[in-house]
Image (cartoon, rainbow, N blue to C red):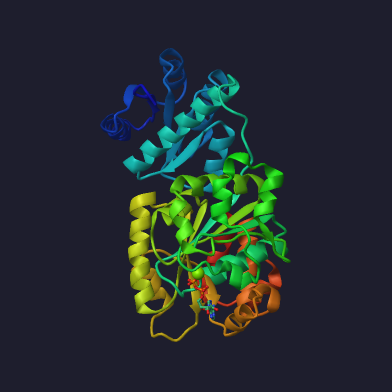
Length: 409
Ligand SMILES: Nc1ncnc2c1ncn2[C@@H]1O[C@H](COP(=O)(O)OP(=O)(O)O)[C@@H](O)[C@H]1O
Ligand SMILES: [Mg+2]
């Protein structure tokens, strides 16, 4: 945004109005004026035509909502961000229906206010550009799930392979599974598929790829998942850059509902790119101290490099129930992050892997399979099955979290 965004504040509470104005000014916004509800607000908005309006909405709703819908009616392109000391759903809904672009809850956090205003203004700018035909037609894009973990041997490949299969067979999505393990590249073995062409070949040929030729680079697994294997010679990764990864994932995401990325237990430029392009990052950990310590560091690194977005970064506990002396709630406290999903410890996983059949296919009703299938359904936005809810593992916390899981998926 080139110029300083101009804001009009509508807040009948003088004291709060002064404080919010001070916050806006310190954030670098130009506050053109402030008003209470009704005629005063409407006149000011009309005369000053700011870039955005920030407005308090409190019960009783009649006056603020009347003011909000009047302004929205008169200035339909004017973005209005609403804030309130209340967070009840009725108030939020009324505000949205009357034209609010975003809703913030008090106490106002200056970073949140800034992010909201900028996001809303950027959206408006894009709308304008789209209307004027200045943007390319939007392309559909699938959800990219990056399965990441701080070390090897904690179940990343197991989870990414089984999740990919479950997304295909259980949630009926089109799925691409990409092996980005720059060291071991186990996906082909786990899924028992031949490797003729790898991600390195696809990256080299990207300029000449269309939807049909893309299929030639992917191995179709019996589950319906299309797999892009790692190169059989690890040295082939050397010719790949972050740019290649972004382009490969872009192409796959345009042609699949889900793209699942398996990564190594190390951090490098390829992994950084895989995390950057992830719509969601599943950070896998196990219950032992070493894994938890590394996960804390990994989480810190993720927050530092990619921002602290709780909706985007989810912790998945693998081999849950293993007796390591560490309790799940201590893991959550140490990570300062809830465990989003639990996959139980089950020796059948190893047996299935040895047979080259993901456990969700070899033993679809095992506890691990039930959890992975349920996770796939949550990610695809499909409602949970009643019978599974009773059967599935995890403690009271897991059950309490389930409604939230579905919403955030
Ligand atoms: N939930 C589980 N229960 C039992 N064994 C598991 C489980 N998840 C993974 N394993 C086993 O642990 C080993 C490492 O798993 P893998 O997925 O290859 O880890 P990573 O990809 O993180 O290196 C494999 O032998 C796998 O079969
Ligand atoms: Mg692996």
